Image 1 (spheres, rainbow, N blue to C red):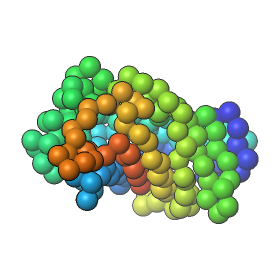
Image 2: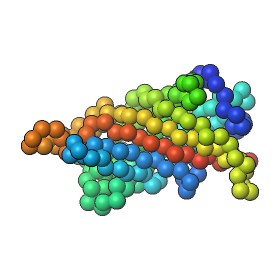
Image 3: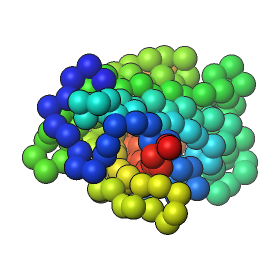
Image 4: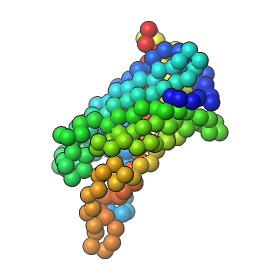
Length: 184
């Protein structure tokens, strides 16, 4: 990250690796204009690196093929060239560029790459603190959300409904629940 205007109590210098077993990368999208489909990615990795001055930086990678919406046919369609084109664009990545205080929470800024397109994003970030862990070292917890427009990332399929609107909405809410384990 290039700037930090806040520190996170207990988040000491070093590398904190995302524990995918205890974390979730999820999303919601409007479906048929009346409900939401929820999904997640099963395969992801990343780290929070904290500099000696307390400045954190974040990197993360998501395997697009690991999408799960609890419907195999829908998942296959989402992986196809109509949506993510997982064969050509197998990963999504995030690299932070800054963090700032926002009341009792924070805003994490960074570059998000999806479908071969990189755009700046802002995530509302909640730091849940640090716990001594269960014998494997300290664990830090974070929650973050952002809303992106899929068309900004070149996912421009339109599936209009006869009465107006679309099968799939343009706005995607991304929800992250992260546990990170400090490396020795």
